[in-house]
Structures are given as C-alpha cells and as structure tokens.
Amino acid sequence: MKIVLLCAIGVGGATVLGAILGFIFKNITHRFSDVVLAFSAGVMLASAVIALIIPSIDMGGKYAVLITAGGIFSGALCLNLIDKLVPHVHKFVEVGSTPDALRRQRVMLFVVAIALHNLPEGIAAGVGFGSGDISSALIIAGGIAMQNIPEGMVIIAPMLSVGVKETKTLLIAFSTGLIEVVGTVIGYFAVTLASFILPFALAFAGGTMLYVISDEIIPDTHADGAENGATYALLAGFCLILLFDWLL
Image (cartoon, rainbow, N blue to C red; front, side, top):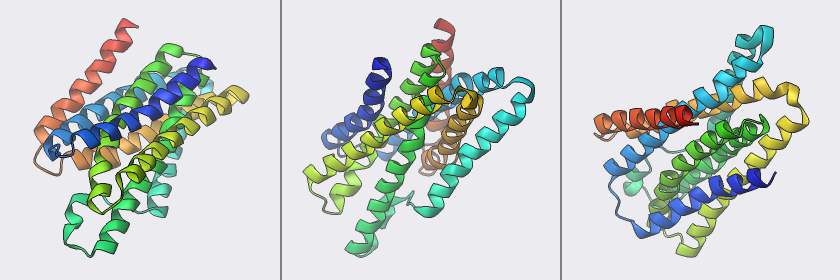
C-alpha cells in the first residue's frame, strides 16, 4: 500500500511540477509544447497497450476478447460522457478577441476538463497496482506522470492571462493533481476488493487512456504546424516504453 500512495503522490505531483515549470517558463513556444505532449502520448499509448490491454486479454479467460473490448469501449464512453457534460476548449489560445468574462469562463472550462480527465487517469494507475504486477504498474504510473508535466504547464499561462492570481492559479493546479491521487487510490481498492473485475478494469483504464490520446492530445499537437515533430515524438515515447518493458 505504501508504494501505491507514493506513486499516487508522484503521479499527482507531476501536475504540480508542470505547473511550477509553467510559472518559470511562461513564454514556452506552442511548438515545443506540442512535441512534449506528443512524446507523452506515445508513452501513454505504449503503457495502455502493454501494461493494461494485453494483461486484460491474458486474464480474461474464455471471453477475454469480449471482456477487453467491452472494457475499452466503456472507458472511452465514460470520458466521452465527461466531455459532453463539461464542454472544454481545445483552442484556448484563440480566445483573446472575446470579452474578458467569456474568455475567463472558457479558460476555466478548459482547466475543469483537465481536472476531470485526471480522475480516470488516476484510476488507471491504481488499477495497475491492484493487478499485482508492480513493474507494469510503474510503467503506467510513469507514463501518466510524464503526460501530466506538460499538462500542468499548459494550464498556467491561460489562467494568468485572464487575471487569476498566481497563488490561486497554483492552488487550482494543485487540486487537479490531487484529483489524480484520489483516482489512484479508488482504482487500487476497487480492484483489490473485487479481483474478479480485474480484466474489465484493466481494459477500462486502457480505454480511457486511448480516448485521451486520440481525442485530446493528437488533435492538439497536430493543429499548429508541428505535426512532423509531434509524430516522431510520439513514436519516440512509444519506443521508450517498449525499451523499459524489455529491460524489466
């Protein structure tokens, strides 16, 4: 349990670290941010397949493919529902011409959406630990943490630009990381208390990660002229996890 709590804090703390870096490097280029996020997407993609989806099939028994497919689509539909309940703004950098009140509202919706997405990501990390495979769980947690750093960075500048005070901005960033800690604990206990749902839970967690990659990260990183760099960064992140999996 201790290692679960430490990793939960690490995963959530990665968002806070990203936020601190966001304060330090306020003028980071969009192209650089796209490349870093794409690298994180590659890490998450490999983690989802290697550490969640494949183990789900291995543990699923006679109906493994159906259980895994059902879990993947359930995870994706869960995040799709969150998207519909909390419409968020991909292009927050284009809201400068809107009235201040509307601009502030759109930026805060963007931040809330990231916070809500952190819950299933945390659950994915917790499910990994609940499976008992610590090496795979560490790969999942590491992949999510790497993605959280640039995610934490990109929420700082928009909030500062609409007049949110620096202290409040940091507290909001901290709260988004805390949500991930809570999700990790929920995922861990849900699986350990009901081990029979493990194959579905692993696939569900994998589905949430695949949804975030396809619906959120890839479109964002391919929309501002950095698609070539983003593509190779994604491949590099994917291969990095392949290397880790081979070494472990």
